[in-house]
Image (tube, rainbow, N blue to C red; front, side, top):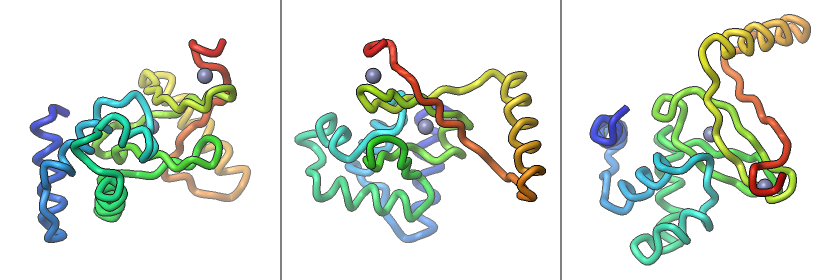
Length: 146
Ligand SMILES: [Zn+2]
Ligand SMILES: [Zn+2]
């Protein structure tokens, strides 16, 4: 998805809720789109300062989450991180570093993803649960910490 397509999709979803796609909101969406994984409010704030103050950043994240544009990730160390929702970012999984706590996205080639889906379906069958989606969390050490 190009950034223009992304902005058009986000804008129309916000407009449906009577919310304006302000330049501050655009900057937060662009920062999340260029990130390699979910980002906490503090990480986004450090990146976007002084353009987006922390108070309006929290508000923006809440608005974007309500509209289904941003999803929270509760992965590592009790820190809430945010990423673009799957319909914007594409299906992927997460690599969580047990040393530094970094969370990175990893998209899996489609043949591997087919195997993952089969495995998830098998687990669902065992548990009498009908899976509709999944996200793997792989814990380990990132390249910086290994
Ligand atoms: Zn690390
Ligand atoms: Zn992610």
